[in-house]
Length: 534
Image 1 (cartoon, rainbow, N blue to C red):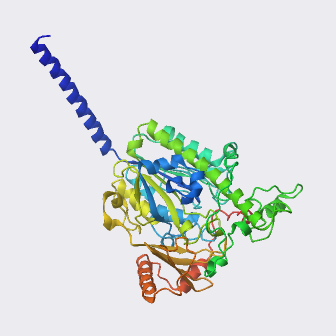
Image 2 (image 1 turned 45 degrees about the vertical axis):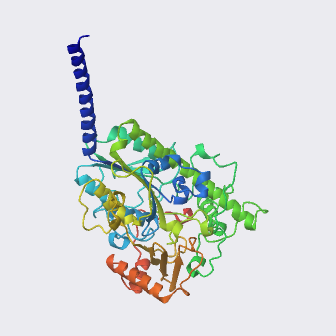
Image 3 (image 1 turned 120 degrees about the vertical axis):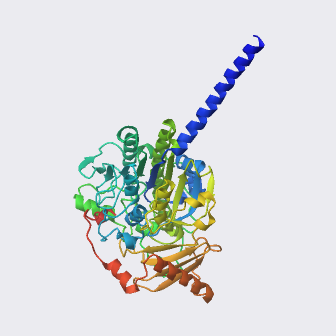
């Protein structure tokens, strides 16, 4: 090859390299300019302790590797809190970005149904050109609005069932699944919508929502033998005696006393009518003593109930983890992973034996704190961890903000997008809570309160007038109520901040007024679930 030919070949190679580099830059630029898709994944009653990204002892024995992928590729948030720790009200607050007393859905029982005419974040996305869908648990009574496609659980008062679940499609067609577990059904429906039903010319918002691991914890048969070769350790506060905490002492959600025969998968005697079988299975709800045999008693009985409960609960979680992995795999296999925000959360926290409890409702940490993992390929560095305080009313404005859409002024929450962009001013100094139901289901006294980085102050007001104060730095398990011995200045400061938050969020009615909210009875469109099944 002569010199001129060599130069010519070099020039052609250089041009090819420059062309390829330019194409890559163009592709990257096009990818950056594409609207972001959003998949919002929510389980029901999934405790942060049961997500292995949070590192609890329970989760080390029952890992959630697929859910953890979201944290590994994005962020784990360590201070996300529910504003009203119960299924329907939390969902309503998440949808609207408003507190329960403002969006109108503040109780599951006798609180009416969700007003679907009000603004929700799916409506905002829909208005801005997104294809929107919700698949799985809804639990708000009225037909979903703001969605181009909906397929939601409707039987058992909207709770749905693990087996033979009934779904309503687009508010009109009702179908019953006869073969697959509810988690598997929702997983398959989600993948089908992504692959076959959506308008691929539009960005999408998908709410992917599970019934699991809600009571009565019935896992798919493929998980029946999971965890059968070992027992889980008891939580440190398993034998809490509730000293100094009057409201807690009156609870009806203790593992040793209030799990019923249905929860423990007992079989009714043959020959009973359906009604009598239901009564037999519900026995234990109100603290009635029962045992599966004459020899299992006392601490041994309580231990057996805990192991039966926790294993079935975590088997249900294993099904969710698989279903989350399926969708993450789909995104990766179809070139969507780098253009899709993925959120994993629960509608509130849950007790896995802490304080001897199951269920939620309290402002104590295990039910107040929510798991929240988020992957945003453009602004969140992989493996991020943050203790920025966030409330569930913040989810809607944040997702809207992340999509580059203007946040509606009527939303009470605020975007925490800035947390991932170095904006320290974005962080809250305190969060607010208010729970209203009484006495169903678990005799949790209505209360409101405030949490700062160090302290938590609560007021139980319905049939008592009790204050509780915890120093979370020295007492993270909230076993020692220091209200009667704390410095007066500290209490005054916390009460002042609580008052300011109540005023800010327009929840500053008198005790008589908020008691009336608890007493108000508004029947739901869907009948309340058969109380024998709760």
